[in-house]
Each structure stands twice: as structure tokens, then as C-alpha cells.
Image (cartoon, rainbow, N blue to C red; front, side, top):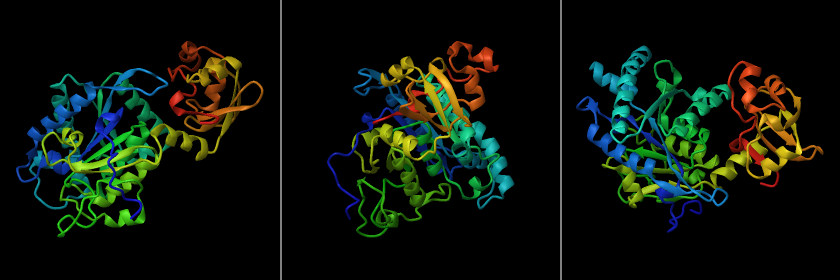
Length: 392
């Protein structure tokens, strides 16, 4: 099978600058005892702390070291609420699930805050649904909130807003949600901690089943290997993990499936424990820029001055002061063309303001945005993370 390869060049956990760790309900909650697996969660918090305080060497353009970002996508609100409320075993009605989640979210947030706080990390809870990663304005708001938490060196703890979600509770899973979050925040690695230690070429219970350590590309053959290996609390199974892999790797995020049934599961990955790595066909920046440049229809144009052109070519963001003219009717988050004084295309990017507001702040200092618009938006009209220059 050409798409599956056993390679000595498997990635290393220390190579990644921004890591999203997904933790499932069956790992967090001991269904038999009806309580949290606190010892296991404490060991995971130690691993997260090690990654969070560690420094990695930034890219050659930056030439410096940075602290690593770690985010958590946590299932468990319904399962934990169910345990707290001592609800009977079996399927729950929708309203029962939502009410159980309301109780469980409080307990879950408190637990993560305590566990991370024990290592001098501040947790920030973010409740989302799949719609928050698909609808443009909600996507941008969620991304901005998470970006600010990371800037403050917090650990965002993200989980599905099960108290208001409907189809997500009945049919959704946090594997795909984690993949969408990872791409939303431009993470370069998604870790799915699972009941099993990776993808097998056949159901793990079958005799002779072999672990696939490295998947270079998700093909129909790879998808056929996935089976419904979920437990009562973990509804995703391997099928949704493969679907998460397609979302993540297409957007430039590597993914690894590893066992969460061991203490210190992230350290185990770092130490070479059995797992399955899914590789992205391109590095995260290249994949994201390809998406911006080729997958989005430009809705408008920004004409910028020579000074702004020079700044962009040095890797800077585009500020309102450098914009000379606005063309087109676009909304915040739409793709726009960026042209220099001579009309030549300089690049493309995602605009941070609606056309009407961009028109008001063009040519003005970022410090004036609040007084002009009446609200404090981003200081950049196009952030460098949302910009692809011609030739990239």
C-alpha cells in the first residue's frame, strides 16, 4: 500500500510549536466508579506543563526561540454530569443530555483549572459548537478569543457547548471538532488520545492485527482500515478519527493517534510509544497560504502605498495607515486582493474589517480605530498570519 509507510523519520513531539490535545470522555471519566480519573488527569497535566514551559527554535525567518502553545479539547461534560447526578445507565433523551452537560461543564472546568493551576498554568474555558468553526463571523470571534488566551500564556480548554447543541450531542464527536479547532488556530499538531494506541490494518481484537505507525496520505485503503472501536462514552471510534485526520492534514496540521490508557500519555509519545502519525502533505504555513491564495474567491481589493508594500515584504502585517483605497463589498474574514501603487498584485489575505469600516480607518493610525469606529478592533487590517504574498 503506497500511502502507508514505515519510516524512520517519524515526527517528534518536540518539533511542534502549537499542539492541540484532544481528551475523550472514556479517558476522563471512570464509568464504573462514576467519577473522574483524577490520577490519570494529573499525569496528563504534568505532560502539558512540560510542553508548555519548553522552548523550541523558531523558523529561520524569526531566528529565535519561543515558548510552545498547548490547547486542550476536552470531552466529558455529559459523562461527568451524568456521574455527578447519578443518572441510570443507558441512552439519555436530548434534554437530559443537555441538563447533564450543564452540571458537568462546571465540574469539568473546575477540574482542568485545578489540574493546570497546580503547575502555574491558567486555564481558559471556551465552549464551541461545530457552527463556530464553520460560520465566518463566529469562526473569527472564536479564533480571536483563543489567540488572546495564547498571547496571555493561558491553556485554552475547549469543549463542545453541549447545553445548547442538538445534533452534536446525538451525532457529533470531538475528534472532528478538535481537528477544526486545530486548523482554526493554525496548530501544527493535533494529538488524539484514544482507547487504542493507533490505527491497525484490521480490528485490533483480530489475530495478527498490525499497528500502522505512519500514514503519509489518507487514501480509501486507509479509510477502510477504520472500524467502530468506540466505547459507551467515547462515541467517535476510529472512523471519526480518520475523518479528523483528513480535516487536519489537508489544512497543514500533522496528527497523531496514541493511547490515553497510560499515565503520562504525552511523555509516552515523546519517548517513542506505539502510535500512528498522520503527515500533512505540506508544512502548516504553506497549506494555509495555499488555502487563502487558491480556495477563496477575493471579494475586494486594497490599494496600499509603497511603504506598506515594503513592510509586507519584510514579513509585517498590513496596518490601516498603509491603505490608500478600498474597492469592493466584502465582510470581515473575506479574502481580498492587495495591490501596490502601480496596481500590481502584492498578495492576498483575509480582511479583519467589513468594507464600510475599512473605508473609515484607511490611512489612519491603528491607535485611532476606537475613536473612529466606536469599538476596538484589531490593529492590523490584514494580519501576517492571514496573508500570502505573491510567489509564496
